[in-house]
Structure formats: structure tokens, C-alpha cells
Amino acid sequence: MKDLLRNILMLLALLMGLFGIMGLLALPLCQGLSYVGVRMTSTTIRFPLSKVKDLDVDRNDNIVVYLRDHCRLQIYQNNGEFLRGWFVYTLGMTATIHIDPNDSINIVTRGDKQYVFDTYGNLLREYQEKGIFERFCNMSTGANTRDSKNNVYKVFQSFFRTHISKITSEGRETIIVSDPFYIWLFRFMFPSLFLCIFSSILLICFGPRYGMLPDNPLSKFLQKSFY
Image 1: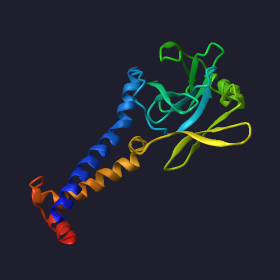
Image 2: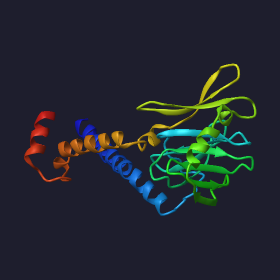
Image 3: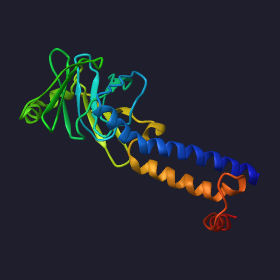
Image 4: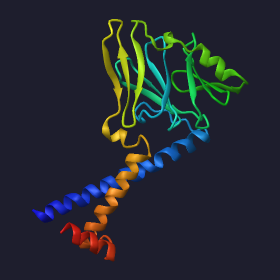
């Protein structure tokens, strides 16, 4: 029974370490891909809701959000189902979203850089214009987050969780977009770093017994503490 428990802990340590390393590398990798203009439009790869500063609703009642940490624009149906997403570089700055009457998605960064996409992730145009960020911010009103049925969509953020809620005209609130745990692990550095450290401790404790790590004073001390 004791050996089975150790084997389970070893497997858990390896999985946690893998998730931790992937989580730590995810943010710089995403920023690098967006910097070189790799869009990677996908209908299956979903990124965690992190530092969502703005959202908008198009004429089909789809929700459009920009994830600043991962330089990712994502679109959800009004029932919370993920539609698609793609990278767009904003220099890590705050960005505002505005959907025009043609249903084109305008993303404007604090650095006054504007990108215009269609709903499928194709870049229609991009340009720089001084003062455009402030002008687009002034265009943002409560109507931008309201769909054709008068439902209002809002982002709620805390240290551990971000979600998007739908609020009906009667005041009934429903969470429609929330990250599952395996996506939450990639949200920011804290959980990834914790997983790396915790899995390393498990490997140091149990690794030498299985020949995965050389024996050393630290592992001896930790093994003595655990056994």
C-alpha cells in the first residue's frame, strides 16, 4: 500500500511539473507569437480569462473579449460556448474593443495602434493614429455590452478567478464563461510556479528511491522527514 501511494505521488509530481513548466512558458511564448504576427486562429484552443479589461457584443450577440496577458482575442456565443480566438500584439498595453456597424472588430491599444479584424480573425487593416485610443474609449457605453434581447454582459475578476456573467433585464445573473481548472492553471505565473516547486519537492523526496535523481543531503533530509 505504501509503495502504491509513493508511485501515485511520483506520477502526480511529474504531471504537476509538466503543467507548471507549460504554464510558466505560456505567457512569453504567446507574447512572442503575437509580436511576430502569428495569428494562430483556432476554434478549439481556448486561453484563460486573464486581465480582461474590455468586452463588446456583436450583432449576432457573440461576446468579444481581449486577454491582455496572452495577447489573445476570443469570441464566445451568448451561451458561453467558445467560438474562436487569435493573437494580436498590443505591446502588453490595455486595449479597448469596439465593433462597428459592419461587424468588424476594432482593437485599439493605449499606444494608439488600431487593428481591424473580421469575425473570422482575418486582419482587414492596421494603422497608427494619435489620440485614437482616447476617442475609442469615449465611444464605449453600456450599449456595447448589451445584446439584442437586452441582456448585459460583464466581466468579474478576482485574484483566483475571472468570469463573464449575463444579467437579464429582470436582474437575474448567470455565469456563462468560466475557465475550467486545467485552463486556470495557465492563467498566470503563481499557480504554475507553485506546481513546479511542489512537484520538485516530491521528486526530491521520492526520486532517489526509484533512481530518478541522485542521492544527496537534501533528499536524505527530506526523506528522513517524510518517513
